[in-house]
Amino acid sequence: ITPRQIRQQLTAIGLRQTVEDLISASTDYNLKYWWEYSQDFQRSHPILKEMGEKLGMSEDDMDNFFIEASKL
Image 1 (cartoon, rainbow, N blue to C red):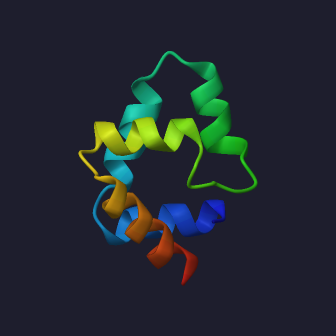
Image 2: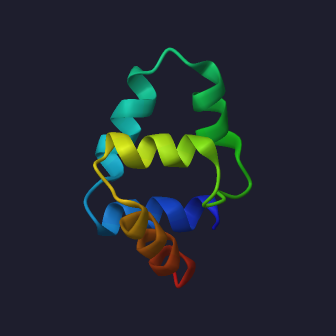
């Protein structure tokens, strides 16, 4: 999905600010660069798996997130 789609879907489910805060508080510059400069977000990326876990999302939740985001 595109950066726009991931951000719109996060907003739609009420997690945009939470994700932005987690990334902002991180000392991992690779994470920050990944979030700001990625051309797309792939469901299988390890960072997304880790972020989903931090947000309490199951694998099914993440799958559904990507399905819905792809429709935007």
